[in-house]
Length: 378
Ligand code: AMP
Image (cartoon, rainbow, N blue to C red; front, side):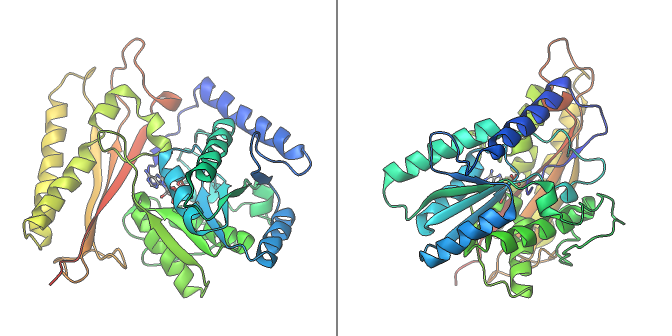
Protein backbone atom coordinates (compact mmCIF):
# COMPACT_ATOMS: atom_id res chain seq x y z
CA UNK A 1 0.00 0.00 0.00
CA UNK A 2 2.80 2.28 0.67
CA UNK A 3 5.56 1.94 -1.97
CA UNK A 4 5.97 4.98 -4.04
CA UNK A 5 6.64 3.54 -7.45
CA UNK A 6 3.66 4.34 -9.55
CA UNK A 7 2.74 2.41 -12.65
CA UNK A 8 1.02 4.51 -15.26
CA UNK A 9 -0.59 2.08 -17.61
CA UNK A 10 -3.89 1.26 -19.19
CA UNK A 11 -2.48 -1.72 -21.10
CA UNK A 12 -4.18 -5.10 -20.77
CA UNK A 13 -2.44 -7.33 -18.25
CA UNK A 14 -0.14 -10.08 -19.39
CA UNK A 15 -1.90 -13.43 -19.01
CA UNK A 16 0.71 -14.53 -16.47
CA UNK A 17 -0.26 -11.57 -14.27
CA UNK A 18 -3.93 -12.43 -14.43
CA UNK A 19 -3.12 -15.96 -13.37
CA UNK A 20 -1.02 -14.70 -10.47
CA UNK A 21 -3.85 -12.48 -9.27
CA UNK A 22 -6.42 -15.27 -9.52
CA UNK A 23 -4.16 -17.80 -7.84
CA UNK A 24 -3.60 -15.32 -5.01
CA UNK A 25 -7.26 -14.85 -4.26
CA UNK A 26 -8.00 -18.57 -4.55
CA UNK A 27 -5.26 -19.61 -2.14
CA UNK A 28 -6.13 -16.84 0.32
CA UNK A 29 -9.86 -17.67 0.20
CA UNK A 30 -9.24 -21.40 0.68
CA UNK A 31 -6.92 -20.57 3.51
CA UNK A 32 -9.39 -18.34 5.25
CA UNK A 33 -12.18 -20.92 5.19
CA UNK A 34 -10.24 -23.02 7.69
CA UNK A 35 -11.33 -22.66 11.30
CA UNK A 36 -8.78 -20.65 13.28
CA UNK A 37 -6.27 -20.63 10.38
CA UNK A 38 -2.54 -20.37 10.85
CA UNK A 39 0.26 -20.11 8.31
CA UNK A 40 1.64 -23.60 7.53
CA UNK A 41 4.62 -24.68 9.65
CA UNK A 42 4.14 -21.80 12.06
CA UNK A 43 1.89 -20.51 14.82
CA UNK A 44 1.15 -17.29 12.96
CA UNK A 45 -2.59 -16.66 12.97
CA UNK A 46 -4.39 -15.36 9.90
CA UNK A 47 -7.28 -12.96 10.33
CA UNK A 48 -9.48 -11.82 7.45
CA UNK A 49 -12.34 -10.28 9.42
CA UNK A 50 -12.32 -7.67 12.15
CA UNK A 51 -14.27 -9.29 15.06
CA UNK A 52 -11.85 -12.23 15.47
CA UNK A 53 -8.86 -9.91 15.33
CA UNK A 54 -10.45 -7.62 17.95
CA UNK A 55 -11.01 -10.55 20.26
CA UNK A 56 -7.40 -11.63 19.85
CA UNK A 57 -6.24 -8.06 20.47
CA UNK A 58 -8.24 -7.84 23.68
CA UNK A 59 -6.50 -10.96 24.95
CA UNK A 60 -3.07 -9.41 24.17
CA UNK A 61 -4.00 -6.51 26.41
CA UNK A 62 -5.18 -8.80 29.19
CA UNK A 63 -1.91 -10.75 28.87
CA UNK A 64 0.12 -7.50 29.04
CA UNK A 65 1.55 -8.12 25.57
CA UNK A 66 2.36 -5.02 23.55
CA UNK A 67 1.51 -5.06 19.86
CA UNK A 68 3.51 -3.74 16.88
CA UNK A 69 1.93 -3.35 13.45
CA UNK A 70 3.77 -3.48 10.12
CA UNK A 71 1.38 -2.44 7.33
CA UNK A 72 2.21 -3.82 3.86
CA UNK A 73 0.66 -4.53 0.50
CA UNK A 74 2.31 -7.97 0.37
CA UNK A 75 4.79 -9.05 -2.33
CA UNK A 76 7.18 -9.08 0.58
CA UNK A 77 10.92 -8.45 0.23
CA UNK A 78 13.85 -7.76 2.54
CA UNK A 79 12.65 -4.17 3.15
CA UNK A 80 9.42 -5.44 4.71
CA UNK A 81 11.26 -8.13 6.65
CA UNK A 82 13.61 -5.58 8.19
CA UNK A 83 10.60 -3.67 9.56
CA UNK A 84 9.19 -6.88 11.03
CA UNK A 85 12.58 -7.64 12.62
CA UNK A 86 12.59 -4.16 14.12
CA UNK A 87 9.08 -4.66 15.50
CA UNK A 88 9.93 -8.05 17.04
CA UNK A 89 12.74 -6.49 19.06
CA UNK A 90 10.40 -4.50 21.30
CA UNK A 91 6.88 -5.88 20.82
CA UNK A 92 5.60 -9.16 22.24
CA UNK A 93 3.21 -9.61 19.33
CA UNK A 94 3.87 -8.40 15.80
CA UNK A 95 0.96 -8.08 13.38
CA UNK A 96 1.75 -7.84 9.67
CA UNK A 97 -1.08 -6.54 7.56
CA UNK A 98 -1.27 -7.51 3.90
CA UNK A 99 -3.82 -5.51 1.98
CA UNK A 100 -3.68 -3.96 -1.49
CA UNK A 101 -5.70 -0.87 -0.77
CA UNK A 102 -7.75 0.21 -3.82
CA UNK A 103 -8.27 3.82 -2.75
CA UNK A 104 -4.60 4.76 -2.94
CA UNK A 105 -4.34 3.71 -6.59
CA UNK A 106 -5.27 6.31 -9.21
CA UNK A 107 -7.60 5.26 -12.01
CA UNK A 108 -4.74 4.65 -14.47
CA UNK A 109 -2.47 2.94 -11.98
CA UNK A 110 -1.56 -0.69 -11.44
CA UNK A 111 -4.21 -1.91 -8.98
CA UNK A 112 -5.09 -4.98 -11.07
CA UNK A 113 -1.55 -5.98 -11.93
CA UNK A 114 0.00 -5.24 -8.51
CA UNK A 115 2.05 -8.37 -7.65
CA UNK A 116 0.19 -10.74 -5.34
CA UNK A 117 2.28 -13.53 -3.88
CA UNK A 118 0.35 -14.84 -0.87
CA UNK A 119 1.97 -18.30 -0.71
CA UNK A 120 5.48 -16.90 -0.99
CA UNK A 121 4.72 -14.12 1.52
CA UNK A 122 3.42 -16.53 4.15
CA UNK A 123 6.39 -18.84 3.61
CA UNK A 124 8.75 -15.89 4.13
CA UNK A 125 6.92 -14.91 7.32
CA UNK A 126 7.05 -18.47 8.70
CA UNK A 127 10.81 -18.63 7.99
CA UNK A 128 11.45 -15.23 9.52
CA UNK A 129 9.46 -16.16 12.61
CA UNK A 130 11.64 -19.24 13.10
CA UNK A 131 14.78 -17.10 12.68
CA UNK A 132 13.51 -14.57 15.23
CA UNK A 133 12.89 -17.36 17.74
CA UNK A 134 16.37 -18.85 17.17
CA UNK A 135 18.25 -15.54 17.32
CA UNK A 136 17.57 -14.52 20.89
CA UNK A 137 17.45 -10.82 21.68
CA UNK A 138 13.92 -10.45 20.34
CA UNK A 139 11.08 -9.73 22.69
CA UNK A 140 8.40 -11.11 20.48
CA UNK A 141 7.30 -13.04 17.45
CA UNK A 142 5.15 -12.65 14.39
CA UNK A 143 1.82 -13.37 16.02
CA UNK A 144 -0.66 -12.63 13.26
CA UNK A 145 -1.23 -11.64 9.67
CA UNK A 146 -4.20 -9.42 9.01
CA UNK A 147 -5.28 -9.86 5.39
CA UNK A 148 -8.69 -8.19 5.39
CA UNK A 149 -11.33 -8.45 2.74
CA UNK A 150 -12.29 -5.19 1.04
CA UNK A 151 -15.76 -5.65 2.57
CA UNK A 152 -14.19 -5.53 6.03
CA UNK A 153 -12.04 -2.50 5.25
CA UNK A 154 -14.73 -0.52 3.45
CA UNK A 155 -18.05 -1.48 5.13
CA UNK A 156 -19.99 1.06 3.05
CA UNK A 157 -18.27 -0.14 -0.14
CA UNK A 158 -14.92 1.15 -1.38
CA UNK A 159 -15.10 4.72 -2.66
CA UNK A 160 -14.06 5.10 -6.30
CA UNK A 161 -10.47 5.84 -7.24
CA UNK A 162 -11.33 9.19 -8.85
CA UNK A 163 -10.31 12.46 -7.21
CA UNK A 164 -13.95 13.54 -6.94
CA UNK A 165 -15.13 10.26 -5.34
CA UNK A 166 -17.34 10.60 -2.29
CA UNK A 167 -16.72 8.62 0.88
CA UNK A 168 -15.18 8.69 4.34
CA UNK A 169 -11.61 9.87 3.83
CA UNK A 170 -8.73 11.09 5.93
CA UNK A 171 -6.79 13.89 4.28
CA UNK A 172 -3.60 15.32 5.71
CA UNK A 173 -2.57 18.57 4.10
CA UNK A 174 -0.37 20.23 3.01
CA UNK A 175 2.05 17.30 3.32
CA UNK A 176 -0.21 15.01 1.30
CA UNK A 177 -0.51 17.48 -1.59
CA UNK A 178 3.11 18.01 -2.54
CA UNK A 179 5.71 15.84 -4.31
CA UNK A 180 4.16 12.35 -4.59
CA UNK A 181 0.80 13.87 -3.74
CA UNK A 182 1.08 16.37 -6.58
CA UNK A 183 1.63 13.60 -9.14
CA UNK A 184 -0.81 11.17 -7.53
CA UNK A 185 -3.72 13.25 -6.20
CA UNK A 186 -5.63 10.41 -4.50
CA UNK A 187 -2.61 8.57 -3.19
CA UNK A 188 -2.06 10.01 0.27
CA UNK A 189 -5.79 10.28 0.90
CA UNK A 190 -5.93 6.52 0.32
CA UNK A 191 -2.86 5.86 2.48
CA UNK A 192 -4.05 7.99 5.41
CA UNK A 193 -7.55 6.48 5.21
CA UNK A 194 -6.35 2.87 5.16
CA UNK A 195 -3.79 3.48 7.91
CA UNK A 196 -6.44 5.11 10.11
CA UNK A 197 -8.60 2.01 9.60
CA UNK A 198 -5.73 -0.40 10.28
CA UNK A 199 -4.74 1.51 13.42
CA UNK A 200 -8.37 1.53 14.65
CA UNK A 201 -8.74 -2.18 14.00
CA UNK A 202 -5.39 -3.47 15.32
CA UNK A 203 -4.96 -0.83 18.07
CA UNK A 204 -1.16 -1.16 17.92
CA UNK A 205 1.18 0.34 20.50
CA UNK A 206 3.83 0.82 17.81
CA UNK A 207 3.68 1.05 14.02
CA UNK A 208 6.57 0.55 11.59
CA UNK A 209 7.14 2.29 8.26
CA UNK A 210 10.08 2.38 5.85
CA UNK A 211 12.22 5.44 5.16
CA UNK A 212 12.01 4.43 1.50
CA UNK A 213 8.59 6.14 1.46
CA UNK A 214 9.70 9.15 3.41
CA UNK A 215 6.79 11.45 2.63
CA UNK A 216 4.47 8.72 3.87
CA UNK A 217 6.34 8.61 7.19
CA UNK A 218 5.95 12.38 7.62
CA UNK A 219 2.25 12.13 6.76
CA UNK A 220 1.63 9.25 9.20
CA UNK A 221 3.43 11.06 12.01
CA UNK A 222 1.30 14.15 11.31
CA UNK A 223 -1.90 12.10 11.29
CA UNK A 224 -1.07 10.35 14.57
CA UNK A 225 -0.24 13.69 16.16
CA UNK A 226 -3.22 15.64 14.84
CA UNK A 227 -5.76 12.91 15.62
CA UNK A 228 -4.28 12.39 19.12
CA UNK A 229 -3.83 8.70 18.42
CA UNK A 230 -1.35 7.72 21.10
CA UNK A 231 0.62 5.43 18.80
CA UNK A 232 4.40 5.41 18.52
CA UNK A 233 5.65 5.63 14.90
CA UNK A 234 9.01 4.00 14.14
CA UNK A 235 10.91 4.37 10.87
CA UNK A 236 13.19 1.65 9.44
CA UNK A 237 16.11 2.37 7.10
CA UNK A 238 15.79 1.75 3.36
CA UNK A 239 16.95 -1.72 2.34
CA UNK A 240 18.71 -1.78 -1.03
CA UNK A 241 19.78 -4.17 -3.77
CA UNK A 242 23.53 -4.80 -4.11
CA UNK A 243 23.98 -1.83 -6.50
CA UNK A 244 22.01 0.51 -4.22
CA UNK A 245 18.57 0.47 -5.85
CA UNK A 246 15.91 0.72 -3.15
CA UNK A 247 14.02 -2.57 -2.89
CA UNK A 248 10.42 -2.36 -3.95
CA UNK A 249 7.64 -4.81 -4.74
CA UNK A 250 7.30 -2.98 -8.04
CA UNK A 251 10.86 -3.39 -9.27
CA UNK A 252 9.60 -6.56 -10.99
CA UNK A 253 7.96 -4.34 -13.60
CA UNK A 254 11.29 -2.92 -14.78
CA UNK A 255 12.78 -5.74 -16.88
CA UNK A 256 16.46 -6.09 -17.64
CA UNK A 257 17.10 -3.04 -19.85
CA UNK A 258 15.51 -0.50 -17.54
CA UNK A 259 16.88 -2.16 -14.42
CA UNK A 260 20.41 -1.28 -15.65
CA UNK A 261 19.53 2.42 -15.78
CA UNK A 262 17.31 2.48 -12.68
CA UNK A 263 20.12 3.84 -10.51
CA UNK A 264 19.82 7.25 -12.14
CA UNK A 265 17.78 8.66 -9.27
CA UNK A 266 19.94 7.20 -6.53
CA UNK A 267 23.04 8.54 -8.27
CA UNK A 268 21.55 12.01 -8.65
CA UNK A 269 20.59 12.10 -4.96
CA UNK A 270 24.07 10.91 -3.96
CA UNK A 271 25.64 13.79 -5.92
CA UNK A 272 23.35 16.23 -4.11
CA UNK A 273 24.27 14.68 -0.76
CA UNK A 274 27.93 15.09 -1.70
CA UNK A 275 27.41 18.85 -2.25
CA UNK A 276 25.79 19.13 1.20
CA UNK A 277 28.62 17.20 2.83
CA UNK A 278 31.09 19.58 1.17
CA UNK A 279 29.35 22.56 2.76
CA UNK A 280 26.69 23.48 0.18
CA UNK A 281 23.57 24.80 1.88
CA UNK A 282 21.57 26.54 -0.84
CA UNK A 283 19.08 24.83 -3.12
CA UNK A 284 21.18 25.61 -6.20
CA UNK A 285 24.38 24.28 -4.67
CA UNK A 286 22.70 21.04 -3.60
CA UNK A 287 20.19 20.30 -6.35
CA UNK A 288 22.11 21.85 -9.28
CA UNK A 289 24.60 18.96 -9.64
CA UNK A 290 21.82 16.35 -9.19
CA UNK A 291 19.70 17.86 -11.97
CA UNK A 292 22.76 18.15 -14.18
CA UNK A 293 23.66 14.47 -13.69
CA UNK A 294 20.11 13.35 -14.49
CA UNK A 295 20.16 15.53 -17.63
CA UNK A 296 23.49 14.06 -18.78
CA UNK A 297 22.37 10.47 -18.18
CA UNK A 298 19.17 11.11 -20.10
CA UNK A 299 21.14 12.67 -22.98
CA UNK A 300 23.50 9.66 -23.02
CA UNK A 301 20.55 7.27 -23.34
CA UNK A 302 18.85 9.28 -26.06
CA UNK A 303 21.96 8.92 -28.21
CA UNK A 304 21.75 5.13 -28.13
CA UNK A 305 19.66 3.29 -30.71
CA UNK A 306 15.95 2.71 -29.88
CA UNK A 307 16.46 -1.03 -29.28
CA UNK A 308 19.14 -0.29 -26.67
CA UNK A 309 18.10 2.89 -24.97
CA UNK A 310 16.00 3.68 -21.92
CA UNK A 311 13.92 6.81 -21.68
CA UNK A 312 13.07 8.35 -18.34
CA UNK A 313 11.55 11.58 -17.06
CA UNK A 314 12.49 13.24 -13.80
CA UNK A 315 9.25 14.15 -12.02
CA UNK A 316 10.98 16.04 -9.20
CA UNK A 317 14.16 16.28 -7.21
CA UNK A 318 13.30 17.96 -3.95
CA UNK A 319 15.06 19.57 -1.03
CA UNK A 320 12.55 19.76 1.80
CA UNK A 321 12.04 20.44 5.47
CA UNK A 322 12.22 17.13 7.37
CA UNK A 323 9.11 17.78 9.46
CA UNK A 324 6.79 19.17 6.80
CA UNK A 325 8.18 18.16 3.39
CA UNK A 326 7.82 21.79 2.28
CA UNK A 327 10.57 22.94 -0.11
CA UNK A 328 13.43 24.96 1.38
CA UNK A 329 15.76 27.44 -0.32
CA UNK A 330 18.51 27.03 2.23
CA UNK A 331 19.09 24.09 4.58
CA UNK A 332 18.74 24.99 8.26
CA UNK A 333 21.79 23.22 9.70
CA UNK A 334 20.08 22.58 13.00
CA UNK A 335 17.32 20.58 11.28
CA UNK A 336 18.97 19.09 8.20
CA UNK A 337 16.72 18.32 5.23
CA UNK A 338 15.22 15.61 3.08
CA UNK A 339 16.49 15.07 -0.42
CA UNK A 340 13.97 13.07 -2.41
CA UNK A 341 13.09 12.39 -5.98
CA UNK A 342 10.86 10.56 -8.41
CA UNK A 343 11.73 9.37 -11.90
CA UNK A 344 9.35 7.84 -14.41
CA UNK A 345 10.96 5.02 -16.40
CA UNK A 346 9.09 4.89 -19.71
CA UNK A 347 8.26 1.58 -21.43
CA UNK A 348 11.18 0.43 -23.61
CA UNK A 349 11.08 1.19 -27.32
CA UNK A 350 11.59 -1.50 -29.90
CA UNK A 351 11.43 -4.56 -27.59
CA UNK A 352 13.68 -7.35 -28.86
CA UNK A 353 12.70 -10.97 -29.45
CA UNK A 354 12.83 -12.76 -26.07
CA UNK A 355 13.74 -9.57 -24.16
CA UNK A 356 12.76 -9.54 -20.48
CA UNK A 357 10.43 -6.55 -20.33
CA UNK A 358 9.33 -7.07 -16.73
CA UNK A 359 5.98 -7.96 -15.18
CA UNK A 360 2.83 -7.02 -17.10
CA UNK A 361 4.84 -6.26 -20.23
CA UNK A 362 6.94 -3.51 -18.64
CA UNK A 363 4.60 -0.54 -18.10
CA UNK A 364 5.92 2.90 -17.17
CA UNK A 365 7.36 2.68 -13.65
CA UNK A 366 7.78 5.51 -11.21
CA UNK A 367 10.86 5.11 -9.02
CA UNK A 368 11.26 7.04 -5.81
CA UNK A 369 14.12 7.37 -3.36
CA UNK A 370 15.47 9.75 -0.74
CA UNK A 371 18.41 10.63 1.46
CA UNK A 372 18.20 12.35 4.84
CA UNK A 373 20.66 15.22 5.16
CA UNK A 374 21.56 15.13 8.83
CA UNK A 375 21.68 18.25 11.00
CA UNK A 376 25.18 19.63 11.48
CA UNK A 377 26.44 19.35 15.05
CA UNK A 378 27.84 22.58 16.46
P1 AMP B 1 4.51 -1.58 0.62
O1 AMP B 1 4.12 -3.00 0.77
O2 AMP B 1 5.33 -1.32 -0.57
O3 AMP B 1 3.37 -0.66 0.76
O4 AMP B 1 5.45 -1.23 1.84
C1 AMP B 1 5.11 -1.54 3.17
C2 AMP B 1 6.11 -0.91 4.09
O5 AMP B 1 7.41 -1.37 3.76
C3 AMP B 1 6.16 0.62 3.97
O6 AMP B 1 6.32 1.18 5.25
C4 AMP B 1 7.36 0.85 3.10
O7 AMP B 1 7.96 2.11 3.32
C5 AMP B 1 8.26 -0.27 3.58
N1 AMP B 1 9.28 -0.54 2.56
C6 AMP B 1 9.09 -0.76 1.24
N2 AMP B 1 10.29 -0.90 0.62
C7 AMP B 1 11.24 -0.79 1.57
C8 AMP B 1 12.65 -0.83 1.56
N3 AMP B 1 13.34 -1.04 0.44
N4 AMP B 1 13.32 -0.66 2.72
C9 AMP B 1 12.63 -0.44 3.89
N5 AMP B 1 11.29 -0.39 3.96
C10 AMP B 1 10.60 -0.55 2.82
